[in-house]
Length: 458
Image (cartoon, rainbow, N blue to C red):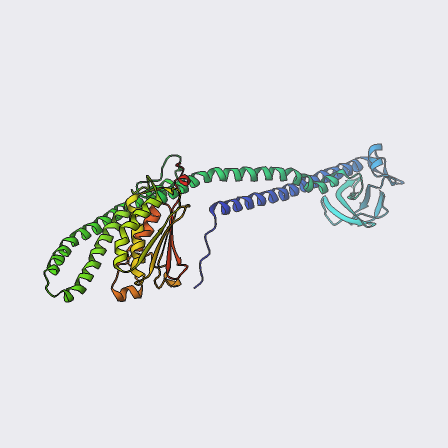
C-alpha cells in the first residue's frame, strides 16, 4: 500500500494558482491585443488601398485613342517607379492589362461578377498586399487593382505591427509584476488570522486545559471550524476530568480493602506463607499510589511556578531513599554542583519523578550494585544503575503507561506507571526524559529541565 503524499501548503497552492492565472491572463492579453492590432492595421491598409483605387476610378476615362489616367501629384508620387512602394493595374473583364504603374501585367486576374477582394502576391521575393475593386467606366467592366510592398521601409503600419508585441510586452510585464507583488502581499495578510490561530493552538497545547481559540479578528469563513475546535476542546477536557476522577475514585476505593488485607496478613502465624502475599500486596499498594499520582499529574492546571534549587531537592530525596537502598544492599551516591541550580518547578510532581527514577534504579540494581544520582549545572537530573540495562527496542516503550518488559512481568514487579509518571512530570516542566546506557553498564535516565533564567525569571 503506497503512502499518501504530505498535503501541500494552502498558501503555496493559492500563490501558484494565482501566479499561473495572472501569467495566463497576461499572455492572453498580449495575444488578443496583438490580434486586434493586426486586424485594425489590416483595415487601415484596406481603406488606404480603397482610397487610392477610388482616386484611379475618378480620374480614369476612355478616349478614342485609348484609356487615359491623370492622377493628382500626391497619388502619382506614391506609384512612382522611383519610389517603388505601390503599384496599380487596370484590367478589363477578359484579364487584359490596359495600363498601370510599376507593373506591366495584371496584379490579379479578375473573376466573373467579382466584388472588391483583397489579395496577396510575391514580387521579386517581397510580399505585397493588394485590393481589386470592380468598376464600370464608359460601359466597360474593369478591375482596378492596387497593391503595396509590405517590406518597404516607409510602410509604417507594418512596422507598428511587427513592434506591437514587444512594446505591449514591456507595458504588460511591469503591470504583471506589480499585480504579483500585490497578490503575495494580500495572501500574507489573509494568512495572518491562520497564523494567529496556529499560535493560539500551540499555546493551548503547551499550557494545557482552559484555553480556547479567540473569535476576535477571525474571518467569518473560519468561525464554524474555530467553534467546532473549541467545542472539541471542551469535550476533551470533560472526558479527561471524568477519567481522572474515575482513576482517583477507584484508587481511593481500593485502599480500604488493601488495608483490610494487610491487617489480616499481620495476623497470619505462618510468616513464610504470608511473605509472598505481602509482596503482592505491596505491589498493589504501590500501583494504587501510582494511579493516584498519575491522576493528579494529568490535571492540566498544574504549573511549575515555584522557584527552587534542584540540587537541594535531589539531595533531600536521595537521603529519603537511602534506607531503601541499604535494605536492598545497594549503594546510593549523589553528586551535585557547587552552585545553585535554580528552576521553576511544581515541587510535588518533580519530587515524584525523581523518586520514581531512584526507586526504579534501586529495584533493578543487584545486591552490591550502585545507583548514582547526578545533578548538572544546566538543569539535568541523571540516574544511573548497575542493572541489566534496557534493550534498544524497548527504549521507546518504557515511558508508556502500564507497559512492562517481559522480565518485569515474569517477576510480577511494577505496574508500568513509574516511568510514565516521570515523563508526565517532564512535560509539565517543559523538559524531556530519555534513557541510554550507563558508563559502567546498566541504564541511565536523563531528566532535562529548563533553568529559571531560560523561562524568563532571574
